[in-house]
Length: 158
Image 1: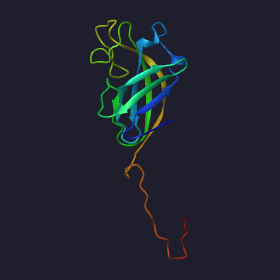
Image 2 (image 1 turned 60 degrees about the vertical axis):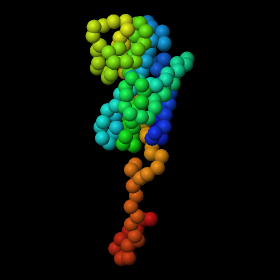
Image 3 (image 1 turned 90 degrees about the vertical axis):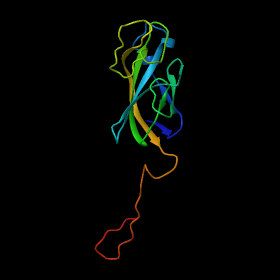
């Protein structure tokens, strides 16, 4: 499980190089599309990483907190709590462009007409859990203090 604080940058170390689908293109022509689903509200948000660093066995992808924008790598993780994530491999034959009409916005998006400058979703490469904890406030967890009962017919656990 990955843990980030609300309002902070999320850093995802994912084992995508071992699970590459389109091995016919170099790593520089691959980007990863994240699908985040909130466990409580069931809202879905998509985003490519703001930055991506490919290593031998993993890829480091950074996603910033902010107004939802699939192309700039900013996601608003509201409400705080547990999210699930799925990571989809997207490959380009030509130059990579994370912009409208050039990069798919979800895992089912097929850009037409097909061209080398348009990304193609290759498939799911990773999935997992994400905990977004709040930095202050009481929205995530609320506790209620109950007084000790005065009668004898109760089991009291503090």
